[in-house]
Amino acid sequence: MGILEKASPTVTKVLVVGCLLRCLFAIFVAMCVAAPKDPVKGVGQETELEAINSGDTAWLLISTGAVLIMTPGVAFFYGGLAQHKNFVSTIMQAFIPLAIVPILWSIIGFGLAFGDTAEYSNGVIGDPSKLGGLMFGVGAAPLANLAATIPMTVFFMFQLMFAVITPALIIGAIADRVNPSALCIFIGLWHLIVYCPMAHMVWHPTGLIRKLGVLDFAGGLVVHITSGYAAPLAAVYLGRSRKSVAPEMGGSGSEHVKEPANVPIVMLGTALLWFGWFGAVLGVLV
Image (cartoon, rainbow, N blue to C red; front, side, top):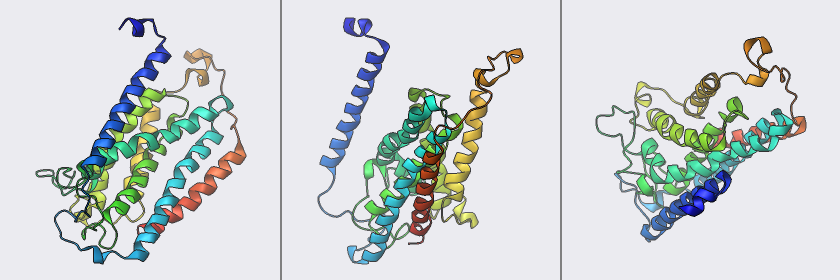
């Protein structure tokens, strides 16, 4: 304790983050050790491995990679639009979901989104104990009510890419306005409280919105509406930057016009997003 008291705040943060990463790595190792050696059958339905279609599987793998490219696309797009001094930090903030969401998705997120509807939830949330909790039931065999011709592991990864890109879309509204630690907490809570229930309600066969007849093929509800509402709400909550507020209103008024850091980088991000979106749209048709 004496060493930590003498350490600088930066060193303390590094030590805390290092301990958290070690704990997460230990959980990952435990999951790998506990994983069954034989192919896991889909929970609730005995779908045989012969039902796997190699063409559908290969196509969805390609689409998964294409959707993954959208994350650096968002990073370049927002980074190029930011101020020069915030160029690198904005890019790194857009990559934060790629570090946090996969861990939560593997532990509980996939189960909340695609597990069987929890009792008394009326189709709002899934039950991770039946599917997806610590990747329970996520194996080589397909699950007929989710992806009848695709291994659950591939479906798991494809949906993970959507879960990663969605909070990354919010970064543009709060870029250079929030510190990384607060952003990490926000992304984790938002993923579990907003994204996972919305994904279950819209994409799961017994979801509340799905049962009303709503079909969302490419994430218009789950991805764009959730992030589209969260972004302005987060910006309103943070308020205007004091540097952009006129002096008579209590600000410094030193930043009325913000020039983009790098327009070619913005175009590069746009191209990556454009390419990745083809993978998102075409992958859901499998």
